[in-house]
Length: 120
Length: 188
Image (cartoon, rainbow over all chains, first blue to last red; front, side, top):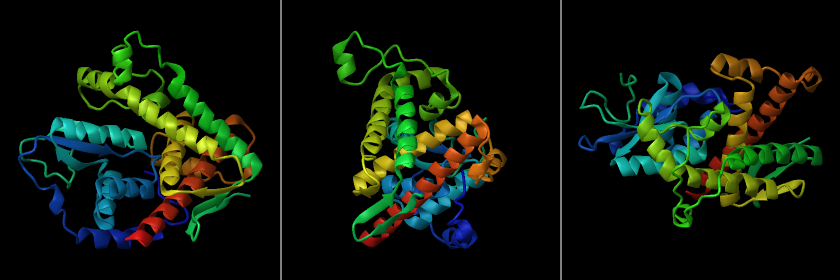
């Protein structure tokens, strides 16, 4: 993502604050599909964070944490659900211009909301 | 010169000079025509009505593919099936947002409702995605290089001109998103 020129100075502080917050919404283990957002060098960090807040209703700190995960790790699982649910989210994300894919959840070795490595 | 979007008593407002409005209108129109370019007349009116497009293909143009990405990383069949069901409506939504933004460019002072602001942010983002493909921005280093070009006296060829246009739309969108966040915080 592209950091902002004028507003991007407090990112480190905000990351520290975000790390202390919980990710309780994204813990249901038995739902089989993930919505993944991928990093790209164009989308503004602020915009991605705003979309996570306004579309998913995530708190500012949670949206920021997920956005930073996309930025630093290259991808983040930002929601999960049935195939139909995550596909509907993907349509919305493509509408916002975010690079979203859906994938079957790996069996227990990737915790949703905490990102991780790309599936082989 | 344009003034950054801000959130205030009137809601979200911004200011653009006529030349800047013409520039933006041109960019918005370009992306609209890209998205409209291969929308075909569908033979089956019912399929068209519910948004199906069985003849759809993965876009060959990189910029268009960035606007309409594959939904599965390693499953072309699954991605194509998803396109058949959804691409038409994604295109139409994008075109709707781009048109709304273009229509709002009829005066220097822009005052946006929350819905206007959302459409504007989506439209500006799509414009930036397309410009970035044309500028070959592939990674953060490319983005930084483009970003370093801020002086309009540097505009000596198409690429440097595009880079300055890209930076202008980036600046405009950043200010819009900050204003949208301020509006959101003021409500909660």
